[in-house]
Length: 228
Image (cartoon, rainbow, N blue to C red; front, side, top):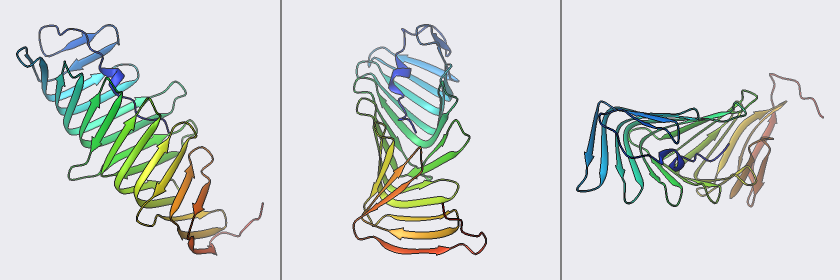
């Protein structure tokens, strides 16, 4: 899972007339039902069916506000983000509101009635799903923070906690706070394990448990256990 890095998408050129605008430097097309340039406050307002598209990104929202001096984007209402990569992997995110800071290269995603939801699809077609109340990405450090009702799921594993941290540098999730719980099925057995901290390795999908480890592991009667 790569960190979602959105601010660099929004290095926009000066606006042209009308509600549609094309950024030739970044190859991005911006559309909305209504576009307003507030020259007094030096900001741009997009309302209704807002979309940002280029070869790598597809973003949608009901409303968007760009503060030109602060170089900050605020998007609200059914925010959808699709980011594709050269290796054919992709990541999707859905949330109620999002803020993108171009200068420090940081992104903030917030829940509404539904949590922040993310889905990563790897080159092998396997998916990794996550949700939380809030998410914050720091592109420069390669870190992404998840807080509030955090959950991480694969096809045979679910992890629950109050806090998660993804480190792009070693490609791991560190899950902690509120006694993290991992429930899953591996070849030949089922398990449910609590510990103070859980580390999940994105590529290998290995799991490590740290401190006060409790729980159970049992054979899955539906499938014979084969020791490797």
